[in-house]
Structure formats: C-alpha cells, structure tokens
Image (tube, rainbow, N blue to C red):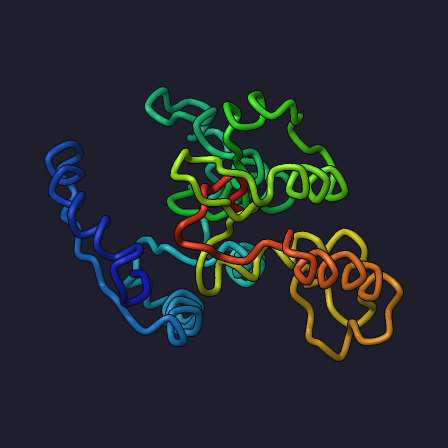
Length: 230
C-alpha cells in the first residue's frame, strides 16, 4: 500500500512483474489518498487484520508502527543482502530516516535533499572560487552578475534558482541555521508564529532581502546561465 499518485505508485506497479519473476511473490499495489495512508496502515496492523504486508510510508511515522511491534527489524537482513547498494543512498536517508533506535526498519525508495551546483568553468575563467559560506555565495554572485557568461552579447543574471515552490527552499536553507523555535521541532519550516521577533529570523532576513534587492538574490531568470541552482 502507498498513496495515490505517480511519484511512488507508478514505479512500484512498473517493477512489480520483475519482483514476481525474481521471487515468485504476487504483488498487488494498493493506493489510497495520502491523507488516509497513515490511519489505514495503523488500523490494519493494530487490529490484527494484517491484510497489508508492506507499505511505502513517510519515515516520520515509524514511531507509530515500530513501538507496537508492527514493523519487522531489518538490520541483519540489510547487512547480509549483497544486492542492496548501501553506499548509493545518501547518508541522511541511510543512517537516520529509515532507522529507529539504531536499527533499520525501512528501506529508502525515495528522498529529497537540497544541493547547490555551479559552473566550474565560469568560476575558473573569472578567477572566482567556489563558495563555502553564504557570504561567499553573495560575493561570488556579485563578481559574476551582469557579465556575458554565455557569449550572446547580453549580461546574464547570477545566480539562477528554480521556479515555483522549489525556489523557496533556498530561503529556508539560509534561515534554518540561524533561527530556533521553542514550540516545534520542525525548525526548518516552523509555523510563522514561532519565528516572529527571534534574532535568528532577523539575521536571516537581513541577509536575504538586501541580497535580492541589490540584484544578487536567488530569483529565477529563464535566460540566465545557472551558475547557482539551489
């Protein structure tokens, strides 16, 4: 069982025949709305119905399933399986999100994390070094902004960033290390009421908004060379 939608369900349905041929197990992929997934799994397992043998679920739900003993401990199985390429999984998903109290109870099928990449050739040609801090990021952007980076005779915008919701993640990356919240553990994206008036939030805003105003903030420009992409 997993949630309705192509992100997870489609690959499971597409690969189910391969798994059946390899193991002999018959796979039926059942989908439900994401809002119902947690409760349907919990009800099925807590009542002992056990009509669901496996599920693709959010790892933060593990506490609700591991504590009562609904999930099997996979630590030894994972360690003994040569077909699992553990070094191909990002450390966060390998060592944190799929574990509970140090033991593995889940396998990572999908995960998202932020990254920044840059045009090393452009940095080299302009004598600019790769940034290691946000101040370095702004300094590099100021040095490259307005130059003709793609040889079309027009100045280019630096840095470039993704469209839509992904664009906001850059702002959260800047804010999260310098703010704290006493009312929620989700300090990367806490409710607005938790951040108003906090020194960390002010420090992040002091960096973020002037950067955007002076033309070096991470806004999207379709015609720009993506020296930075968050």
